[in-house]
Length: 239
Image (cartoon, rainbow, N blue to C red; front, side):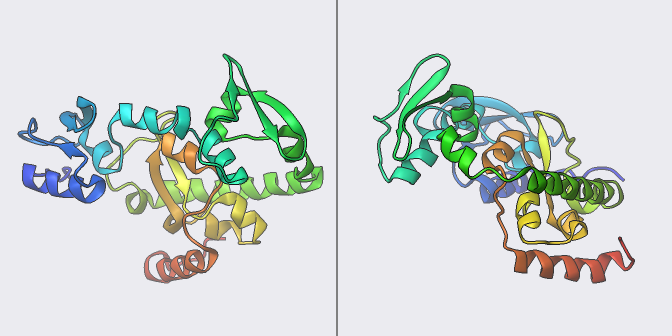
């Protein structure tokens, strides 16, 4: 079955619904989902991007870099939120290390990479809240079970997840759980519910990194969504 072809009006209307008025589409005559289209970022100018990626939420790469580095990095945001300040004057950053003051342990140094990428803070505070070896082992077993159901959902129900025929890749698009695996483990949600296709979504790699182990839906909504789609679409045992 051939892929649906958007008219320019349909493409622009869908893109605005996803991105708002951030981009201009004057250079597009006939939109292409699998080929690069010329799109104008009102802040950084012209860039090229596949139509299916743009409609799935990907945007200007320069905007993405700016929102993920410097003052807007996850590390600085997490630190400001934790200590309740609006500026980052407390940071001393060199080429490989970040130095800041922890309210409990005083001056602390951590890797700049971990700080900028993951929002890591005081290593001593993290160590104090680190789960036991038994908890880590139980989580690994749980995550393995979720992964098995996730891959089964991807293989058997791909059409429900991947509407734009997007390819998964290490630095492209990731298959993400709206209700995270970690929260599923903490709240004792059965692995087949967390790994069900109704909880899966393809999102850009950088968005998945920023999201981390956070959930964007609660457990009540997850379970109601699972049972609705299970009875309506699956109609068979999955475990």
